[in-house]
Amino acid sequence: MDDLLTTKQVQTLLKVDRTTVYRMLKDGRLPGVKVGHQWRFHSQDVETFLSGKPQLTPQEPSSPINQLEAFPLSCIQSMQDVFAEMGGIGALTTNTEGVPLTKISNCNPFCRLIVNSEKGYAACLNSWKTIAQQEDDQPRFLICHAGLQYAHSYIRLNGKNEAMLVGGQFYTVPPAPQETEKNTRRLAQKYDIDPVSLLDASHHIPFLNARKKKEITNWYTKVANTFSQISQERFDLIQRLKRIAKMSSFNLE
Image (cartoon, rainbow, N blue to C red):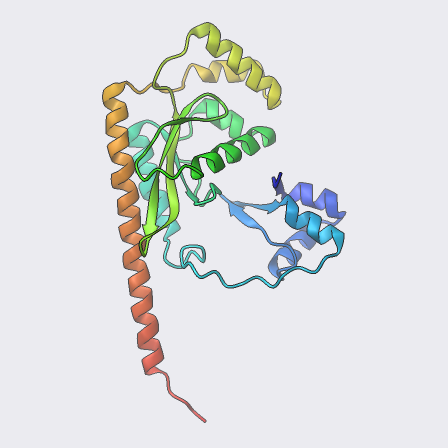
């Protein structure tokens, strides 16, 4: 299983300090991915490094969205924040493998406790990965590891799915109080979270009735389409600027 490791875990495995890890990241010896404001490392990459096998020279990604060249994350984050607050749900944008590209917007207290737990966050990553494996073009609600509802809608660039808007952290069918308490205590024990705090936070999980669920479903598609349009326009502009720069260049030899 290819888990994402924290910088501290990589330090322990490689027996180096944090500065060395970042130096290896910068010079390409150890690939990493940015999750919010933190770096994470695939365990397979760390194992490959430990084995002494040569690292393959990374290829320049063909998709501009992977280079974050056509994907304005600061703009996406702001719009995502508004969408999440208006809908009363949590939201984030990930790549097509479920790895976060933005911070979680409007994260409710229950999910915040889970995300702040190392084991809980790993479980969230697996849930987002599972959501990413769904090939539906229309939002379809799924249940995450904590028993809450999630749905997603793809962000497209040049006719291809390049990222996805994920929204959730709510119930569409309110569970029985006894069931909620049992599930919450199970999660608290599993993820090393204070059960009293998590149980108190469980009372703040939003519930979406049928009308609200229908509204949210429509919003998913509209917001994701808006993200797609922004990215496409930015991509087209960058391509035009590159062509202008190429035509304007001349040989000094």
